Image (tube, rainbow, N blue to C red):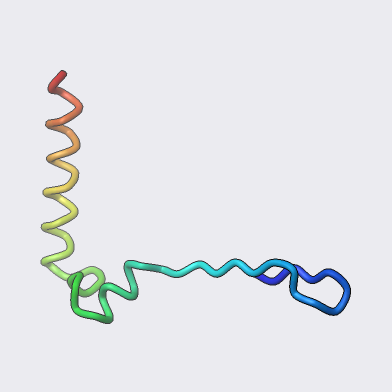
Length: 54
């Protein structure tokens, strides 16, 4: 995003989808693959266990 003051850029902000970058680098499994679904399930289970434990 660019913000201009007159004819000059006074502010610039960039955002990136780090998940897509990580997939392109081979650091994350392909979107909607079996491996991704298993990792999501494990993440949800871990979150549920942590919610139950004080």
